[in-house]
Structures are given as structure tokens and as C-alpha cells.
Image (tube, rainbow, N blue to C red):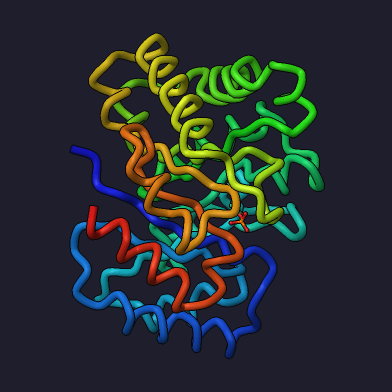
Length: 253
Ligand code: PEP
């Protein structure tokens, strides 16, 4: 049985003080929830301070990006040991905003995945098609390419530590959500692909989150689908109330 995993991607939001306030409020609201894995992914500048707040709670910490070298002349980058030292258990890799605005490719995403899987951090690996790609009928082709290219060389022993986030780009931050059926179709496609690339055991262990305007009102029907194992949540994770509602919904299913 896969446990639900609900993660909040705060993107480039919240100063240090605001982040601490949100983390405190969330921690109180989800206290005692034990059937769902919960993570928040604040900006780098708030990792250490929020990690202090959620220490010994059921809320875990993730970062939004990482580089594949440990240290050196890579101005502006953050390494895996730095994230672990800051208290992270997770890191988002290949978010569509990184692909769209910062030139990330399936190859750089793959290098980051390899590096993270060689450490104790667990990756949340994002894939998803643009509106144009969906309208052209190539959603599966795009998602297949993103997954096969980035997972190239990653051994079976490591693959179940990956959470895949299926995030249709047209649904991120737009208020337009994929229907539960649209999301389930792609999630099932991904699980079949993982069976082909690895085996059915590995495919059945990997969690696949849905991301794209998930909120307290639409979470239940999405999370009821058999291959949807949680959510990667942007906008609705910026308020403790709405994020906690989604977590409580998952806990009730
Ligand atoms: C995201 O950033 O991964 C995301 C899904 O954002 P939103 O929930 O705002 O669409």
C-alpha cells in the first residue's frame, strides 16, 4: 500500500519571518495526522528556520532545486550536502518552471536525480506536458520521453525512492485543474511505463503525485483515483488552512 504524500511547493514566496509563521500554523493544524506523508518546500533562505519549527513533527522539509556537484565555483547553486545539512529530506527536481525559465532539460534533470539518489535525500521528480502538446495529442509521448531520458542509468534498487509529480503545465498556477479522469489516465500510463522500464514491484511502490491547481475543493475526487498517490501543491500550500484541508482529505480516504 502506498501512503499518500502531500507536498507544498512555496516557490519564490515568503520571507524568513513569513515562512516561520506559515510553518508554525501548518504544524499545529496537521498535528496527529498519521496516514499521510507531509512536506513543505520553502525557498532556500527559509530552509534552516522552518526546519527548526517542524523538528519532531509530522511535517518534513524539502527544497525546490539542487545542483549535481557537492561544492565549488558554481555561483548561485546549492548542493545536496548543503540541503541535508539544512534539514531537508526531499528536493523537487525538474519543476516545469525550472524547465521553462531556467533551461533545465531531461539530461540535467537526470544528472540531478542521480546525484540525489546517491545521498539520503529523496527526489520529487516533475513531468508534464504543455497545453500545445496536449492539444496536439502527444501528452504520453512527452511524458514518456521526460521519464525515460531522466531515469536513464538509474538502477531498480533506487527507483522506488523517487516520487514522480505529474504536473500538466497548463494546470499549474492557472486555476484550471486536470479532470480526475485526465490525471488518472496519465498516472496509469506512467505506472505502466515504470513496469516496462523496471518491473511491476518497483512500479507499484513508486508514488505518483498530481500537481496543477489542486485545492481543498477538488482534492478528494483526484485523490480517490487509484494511481494518484498525493499532490504537489503550489498556490493552495501558501495558506495553512487550505493546505491542511487537503492533507486532512487525504488522511480520510
Ligand atoms: C506547483 O507549483 O507544482 C503547482 C502545482 O502549483 P499550483 O498548485 O499553484 O498549480
